[in-house]
Length: 129
Image (cartoon, rainbow, N blue to C red):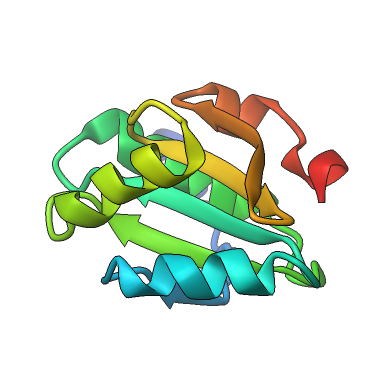
């Protein structure tokens, strides 16, 4: 241990590896029909994110850290500031009031689970797949 380590404390040099999630960018209302159709054979998950909200960023980081990359789902990412029309269409199509951040699980054309804010990181959405 060097002199500066004893004064300032030794820094942990391990770097946490960032997971790359298999995001599909959700950018058009036409993609919602694809989601409905694909949900008949495989769960579709929509993550709605606000790029201007610190809570949304924090929840996204927690979700990403806990996400199991072995899941057999289609994982869609919607930035609401860029595609508010898509967010509104999700509300209309699936009957789920808009919030952000928000997570929806779509199966057989319906939202079988949805949650928002800190509950995204607290709840295990995989039980609805």
